Length: 318
Image (tube, rainbow, N blue to C red; front, side, top):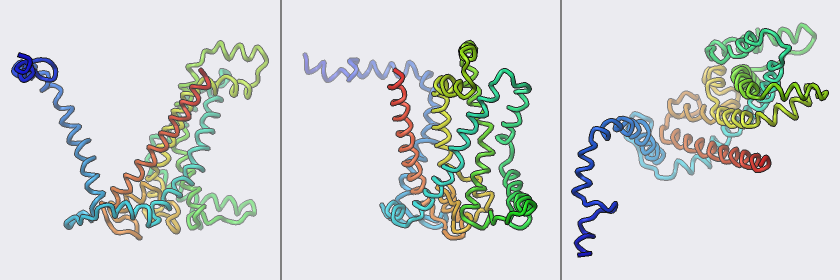
């Protein structure tokens, strides 16, 4: 009796025939949700599996792929290209993303002042770079920082200073790229911070002002602690986007990467191997995929670091 019941009963306790009848009964419901799983398999699961395969081959996209196993990952850490691109990315991130987060927080604090008029106008002006074509922005910055005919160098010479070779030196072109990122991201972060500040009850600010607290004390003791989740959100998103910098250096340097590859970031290097856009590399989709896995690992480590900071902050506040 026990043996027969075990054979005819499924893992869920129902006979197999009954389970089949249940599946047939609800076929319309399964059919209704099937598009999501089909799209996920086609555009999510299959590309992920194919990326694993590509990282094991050497392929220029035209001929037959050549199986190389783990050689692409060995090349990733031994060739020095990935380390150099990671270093460029970190440098540009430090001189662009961190200052823009601090400046946007200060600007949002000023815009939230009840004495300031025409707040909507300022918000619109700050947010305009976010919807401006990056190609047009690159052309403007090229005209501003051109070595010979740039407006910035003309202004420097007008006050008796020497011109700066912005576009032909490593740190010069890095600074220009960082300024482009600062200019483009500033308005977006300001809007996010303003949304966080607007959630603070005005009565708290009124009580602080009645107690004689100045603007700096209000910012340090009220605004920053109460919008800490917003600050963490901006820090996380800014870090992730900062390590995916591509458009600004690519457009500004016409795809050449600047002097000695000084602005060849991680994404720039990956795209270079995808289409041989860099003059110093040849197309290799396998190595480009391996670079993508390297970027993925870096972002995972950054996300883990940010989550640890968030957890520590919550523990301090609890």
